[in-house]
Length: 270
Image 1 (tube, rainbow, N blue to C red):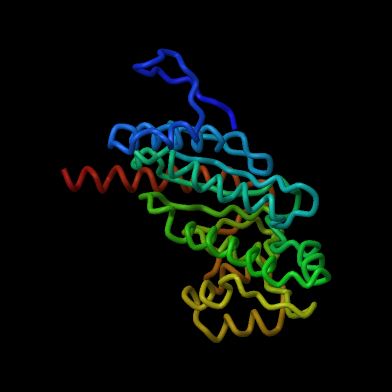
Image 2 (cartoon, one colour):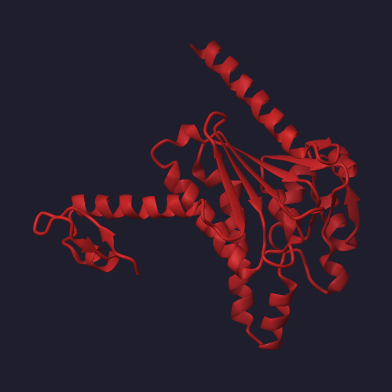
């Protein structure tokens, strides 16, 4: 583990490792120092994640993130770890200034695909190895990420999911955890898991039922049918459909419109 240079009363400039810091007497000052160091490390890592491209637009108060998964556009185990680090980094970066982050946006750099969801190769490997706990750990990791996103990381922000391509299975479940969903017209949506002997168990039923009712949630899950962006908008699961290539601009327009609404509300309250 790398050492971090800190000023120290007994030896100015001395480098202390995380372990050495933890062994110092547990005083409020030391606890605060360690917490600040940990937050700083998490915030810096936010912009150095291997499978997530993160950019901060300070003027708009928007954190733009684009998925760039290694290999198949699905949630491989290392990708999930990047998402956990992403969420920790956001919480750390805005812990002391929560109102600065107004919008969190997630899209994909994979042409024609938002996400295909679960890592089928990982599933096969765990099944062949009879590693039940490995499958459970993978599922719980997915659910923790999704649940925190549904609760906007306990920050007063609006989350926006941008589907410039297909969102299927767990990819659609993750998209449904955002407050606002923008889809390009060519994108497809659905839960095809039943077609190959699996079940969409990362929140599909609850996420769909809460928005449009239990009957349609069951239909989607049991039939495995794939839906167009227009169908999803008509049903109420997608908020806005735009032409191919216009998704990013539409997301900017949504941010601007919401910002104007906030300004009007602030004026009325003053």
